[in-house]
Amino acid sequence: MSKPTRTHPLGRKVTSFVVNLAAAALALGVSAAARADILIGQTAGFSGQVAASVKELTLGAKLYIDHINATGGVNGQKIDLQSLDDGFDPKRAAANAQTLIDKGAVALFLTRGTPHTQAVMPLLDKAQVPLIAPSTGAMLLHKPVHPYVFNVRSTYQREAERAVQLLLEMGNTRIALVQVNDTFGADGITGAMTAFNERKMKPVAHLTYEREKPDIAGVVKQLIAADPQVVLLVASQQITADTINALRAAGSRILGATLSNNASNGFVQLLGQNAAGVIVSQVFPSERSTNLPMVRELTDLVKAKPGESGGLVTPAMMEGYASAKVLVESLKRAGKDPSRASVLRALNGMSRYDLGGMDLSFSPTDHTGTNFADIAIIDPRGRFLR
Image (cartoon, rainbow, N blue to C red; front, side, top):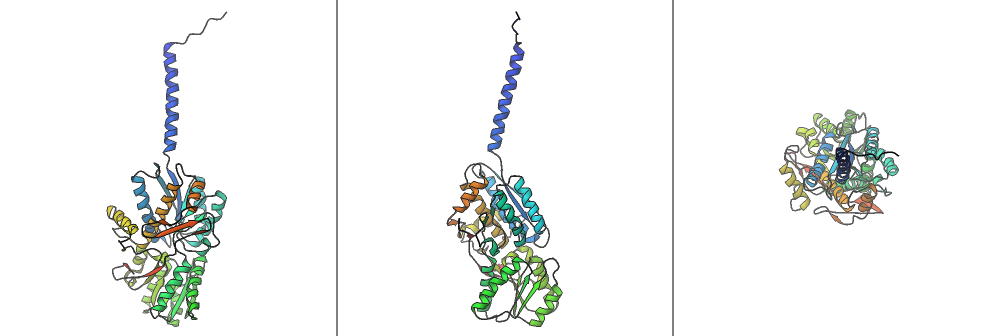
């Protein structure tokens, strides 16, 4: 008959300590998981042709996200915005988006560029992940409605149409069009031509750049020969600024006009002494309309953190700020521990959401968000005046 095994009192204490330690670790793990950050992914051209405006756009978004995180987050969880640089290259944009999806991003946010967003779109379907506020007004993101793309800004067609309408109303009967040879350029020109066709008019010239290697000198030569009063340039900020600067260097006084993708302080800096008088269309209210809550909110945040912005609120920052408000609202409505599916449901139910003086609406059959369009003129101090 075997003797019963005796456990030393110290052994019992050690065993009890290990069990309690394991239980505490498990509880800590559960608690940490409950407080996990909400991962949001962004790919955009932080280097390359659109770097200046992308940085302003993202700064506007981060000011709001940082404010939300500093005041308790979303249902107790902080937002972790992870931004990757794609160098304004569509292939890199797609690769970055895949990386962010694989890391578990609940949503993608604030991509920049039409071909770049196009490259990302097939990944949205596969991963069933929403893309909130792509910074492009391409019509292909609006019609047909893409189930995972939620736009915050107006379309390029709408703003280009409105820009030409206003230019014609101002008495400019000789208008030239110049576009980059991609889906963004084609989109803008479609809107511009709608305004011309309404009045049974035609542009005095319609020229095209290659996106990668634009012949700016050739375009400038043809513009001077066509002798328009105004040229509407549908291109990136670097190409647009280089063209206007080249016109001035050649002695031409043709007025330059462009779309809201160039509504940034970075664009003004690229123009230098040639900025005054350039016309830029807008898809958000003026950054000086402090009667609007959204504008006051952003202005106050910039004043509190003037370092990166230099204390200046720009149209690009307004777009980023408004986009972040939509992102945060969708996360709030998605409930505790938001998932891709719950964020998607929240977005599709976001009807007449007040951004702070500007309404936005989504439904399963309409992901356009807003239709606001206006124009501004850059003054001698580099400000966008309405």
